[in-house]
Length: 519
Ligand code: FAD
Ligand code: SIN
Image (cartoon, rainbow, N blue to C red; front, side, top):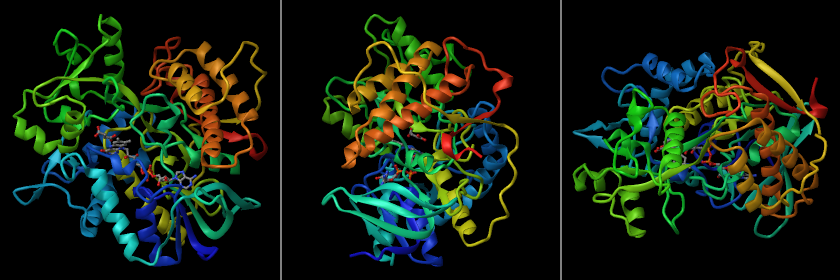
């Protein structure tokens, strides 16, 4: 039986949770709660790598510039400065901890990805970066005095006034409920790709941390910005498996159904344009085609280069009968990364005392309206370090808001009159894909806001992991729909057919709060 009081409770065991735990153990007792096995997380699947300005000719300033351009005017410059300046040191720490990054002639090998002006992506095992990080960090945790409770779902944050006190949990194996207390609670619960029918994310990515935070009164920001990765495998009978952007960095090209390279028609950076541009270009080409097919072709590279650099992808496709050293790969965009999340400052603090957030669940404004490739793993490292420093009193007092926030309190909407789909995981994923996917329209967003509001209000009282996740997904669907409806412009990953232009008036963040917690 585990203790019930700790200095730190960390919810999640991806890179954000494990890294935070390894840093926090220097300052007190640490409990990690995770709803599946320790390595059930997005991190394990990361392919391309970690971006950091460590190469010759590169600099934090260049990385800063690229991040801001990809973020389409909505990055928080201070947060991006922190990310790009402190990134190299945090990556050095991972190397020190034993993550086996690939090398060439004794130097770290650096790959290229979309919208980066330099080769600055560290990778491990070719395209198995996340697996190596997860293995290295979980092994270190296993050897430490950190307590890990697997198959333990966090169901509620416990508060006393405006201060977090602990976490209520449910065992996903035995069904027992329990509460744990701590002076510091960290949300490190990852993303929400499971909200969409087609996604690169595993089953655990259901947005629980945003729901836990929002229900406790935390501010939630930028929920309208959800990134669709341009190249997921699109093959009958196969999952929408990620085909890393690093493939295009190595020379792979997107082809239409006639075999013509089309990306130069859409952007000066062609196949290495920002993700939102590439995803929408693919959708446009699919719309124009007779077969509904678009391909990623890496067959011009020597077969040994392909097999050596992308062993996981090569093997995965071969298992489905596709030899990528010889054949073009059918691809389509899929839901990939949540830019929005629980609002934090550059020290990982939320608006609730003692509650921090780190990783994909958090939103510091570092990714703006569209995350630059491979900045996510880096984000988790940099802000984990800062939140632990903050938890031991090494951070300055929180700054006053910069006036770029539109604060919105969510209230109930009138019921929908037309017949609506019943709430199930499949119906929700299908509904979100159709109404909050790559291309959005005000009328569909209004319907989505109403339907998800009904789902929220009528979701059955949860009793097990599946029903807790479904309730959380209904809430996240609502948060995404409301923010997307409000943002009457197109910017980064958020494209509105009825407002196709970017508007200077909307160079601000939408911050959502629960009704009873507005001050
Ligand atoms: P995760 O790694 O997803 O961990 C979340 C943890 O929280 C899990 O352990 C989960 O089980 C747990 N959890 C969730 N809810 C609860 C709950 N209620 N109770 C208890 N536990 C809970 N980014 C890059 O920078 N470079 C890349 O190359 C890259 N490639 C990617 C490839 C793929 C296929 C995918 C899906 C993502 C990729 N990303 C990449 C994004 C990046 O991997 C993620 O953003 C990052 O790993 C998130 O880390 P995290 O620790 O925040 O979340
Ligand atoms: C990829 O390898 O294409 C994913 C990189 C990322 O999401 O940052």
